[in-house]
Length: 197
Image 1 (cartoon, rainbow, N blue to C red):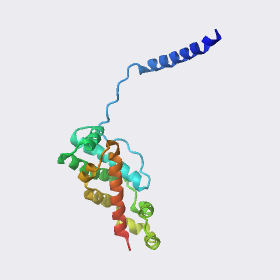
Image 2: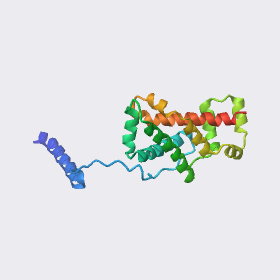
Image 3: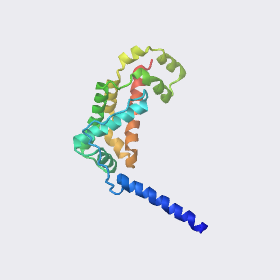
Image 4: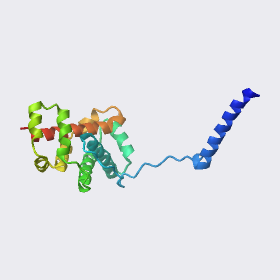
């Protein structure tokens, strides 16, 4: 009798958990529909860093591009990663979507100042000590006036070779990180090129 108590107790607990799940609506599972890319999603504040900034631009940019194309962001990501030769309309929509993302973040006052991004940019670029010291000595206000964030990012996106980037991509899960990395590297080069003594 004692040997049966444990299996009977386990079966009772499993039945109780399943009953609670069914009572909570678990018996009628319906997959969620993808979010409408034309409805702006709430966006979290952007920490002052190049990587979070690039990530936010890509997420908002993919929504903008998907909206232009009349498809979900998820379908766009799969199409971009799986298509051998993309229609010019798709790559144009992506580039325009990224540019629109910068405009939206700028309008909302959510873009960090270049002076906030500069320490990370200098560290990532491996700038020699003396050049780093000279660049660090430039007052933040002067850096931000000479290098406003929004025009710098627009220029970065304009120079982005979306077709080349997508042709080098083999895994759809890498799309966002590949675009983020390309934006990050291009922005880094622009910042340093404009600030080198």
